[in-house]
Length: 268
Length: 250
Image (cartoon, rainbow over all chains, first blue to last red; front, side, top):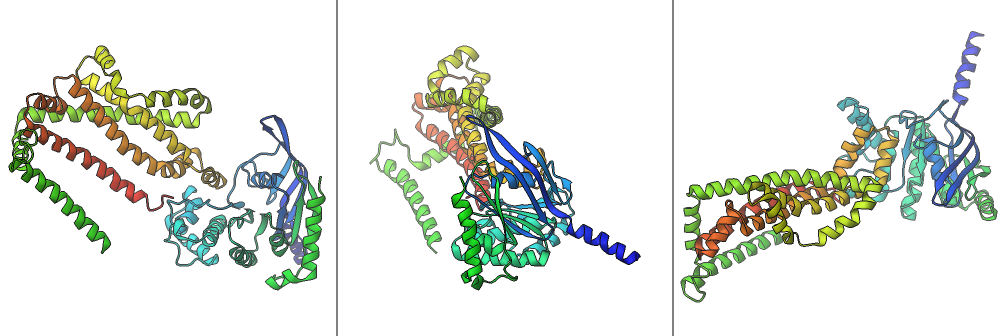
């Protein structure tokens, strides 16, 4: 009996949502007074899931992500990350990967990956070995000494992902990380991200404009409306894993994509 | 290979100019009274470098240049950062700074003489005045060159204000700051020279003006060489530092 009780506790922890957003609304002060940016957002992301948020430009996706990262406070509502509120950035719980050009050009790839650890005054050896392990994970072993301007767009985003993971946070937030890449690189990076995700069993919240990318990557696609951003629909993607490029040509893929597109298009 | 040819060409060109400087006046094609041959200028340079009066002039001018530089750069830097970071301050002062920057500073020289006399303080004040505006502009440009996403990354990894300053602001601004140092020294040196040549009792500028008035052309050119070497040396030293930073400059 004791054994069973232990199991229950264990499973209870495993099922605790990685991200829990309750009744979140946000209003910011614009040029012409208060602008409602987000309204009534309820979102639960179970641990280990890959959730993609899509929506029109200016729907507050990025604002929501900033709040999940503790970079901004919502006007009302609550956010729990890994079971606790996140009033300020906490890289041990949440790693963030931004859009293009967020690497520091004056640091080498490995120094960029080490940057979050350096802020925490981690010992030099530990920093280095941790960063090297991360570069290896993202497929950039041996490129640590290069400066960002010596790397391709895809490689730079690999470094960004390594930096986001270096403190081993349970949650990884990604704000259109592949938006600036060409189509081929973007596909490859999507595939690579899924590999990294399956190897690290992180919870990923990923923002994108690309519906194909959304369906391809996600366990669940959250569709948001134009400003003020609301959640219109939550589309479960039950395509098997590992995902393959061939799945994009299937009817199921097309139907999911179409359903999301209709939601976005018909939104007021 | 192309690089070494370039360097050889430069050396050849310099040698040609120096040779012409020697030959043309010596052969009488150019009036040697106006342009003494190089050998004579170099002899004069060796001679003036022995003189105690010249040593003293160098000391005075160096002190003026250094003190003015040490005032103008931090002062301009602070005002520039303030005008870039503080919206209110920037909105008020930036247009004025642009207006004043466009005015030739030398027209204010008589005012500086009336206010400070013709000694050390006046040289420092005038050189500071002629330098500070370019420093303000460059420093505010340096702050504006810091990318918002770089700040956001640091914040998202929990950087403190001090860490953001040291690890994001300083390295972001470094290329422009070094260039500012270089350019501000050009303005600063020019300011001191103009002030000395216009009215003073001491300094290299004074000596050069005297040599010119007395038609002592070899000494005059020797003085020019001396100042040119000093200015180029400083400029190249900072440029070497800049080159080290420019590997990552985008």
